[in-house]
Amino acid sequence: MDREKEVERLNEADRHIATGELAVSKQIALIEKLKQDGHDISQAVKQLHDFQNGLDSMREHRSHIVQMIDQIDRGLA
Image (cartoon, rainbow, N blue to C red; front, side, top):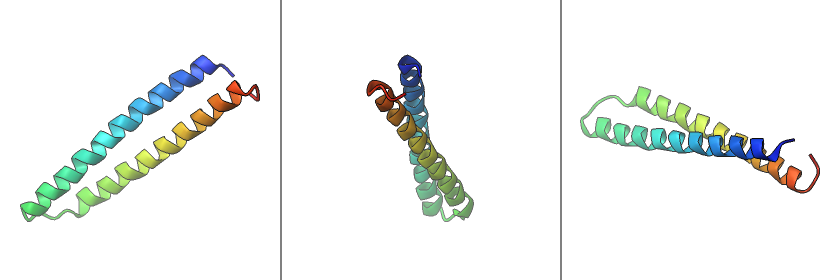
């Protein structure tokens, strides 16, 4: 395996996670605003859960990349 390529993948995963975290934060703020204004929040909450699930997947993927880099550094990959 190519360590440099894995580090690039890690950096990309970090960018995706940051984007996902921002989306979650914005969705939470939107839900609060909708609630304050008396609107139905069911679809917004569903979308928040979708964003959170996607973020969990991105974090899991990042963890696999970190493990691969560790294996490369230990000469196991």
